[in-house]
Image (cartoon, rainbow, N blue to C red):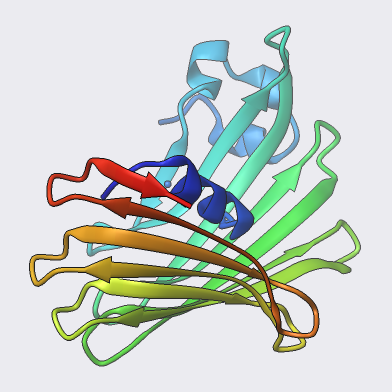
Length: 203
């Protein structure tokens, strides 16, 4: 996978999501008493696993620039019978134990176990929806992702990324599109690569 400014821009524009994975009293952390644990312990995420080894819960703490304990995060994950992660829910609480943000990301897979859709939504402390976006993925005959299109809730396109690959999955071109509200293309950007992944051209 190549890392480049275009790809990073697309990932950030997709929000994912997300977007979007031990105990001296882990329950104190969740009960709004973070100071009851040591700083070293608070820096370690607290993980819970199912019997198949999947992480189904995660708890961690954010710190302010002056190293004081700040917001706390609580994540839950769901998996299907094939161990595909089908949902991620994250909730952020302030130091008074008030929930200030919630995000939900749902994943859909096809019969080949390929992720074909993600839906991301975020909510404020009253459960008012703040954002919603859907990504739809397409694959070539060899199972490599060749398209990622992002939609708003009204069905209009927001962005799209297309990749030109060879039989081995090597990327030779990436094309990024952004769209106007009426569905017309607003902007197009692209990068072309040689067989070694070196950038040949940007446009």
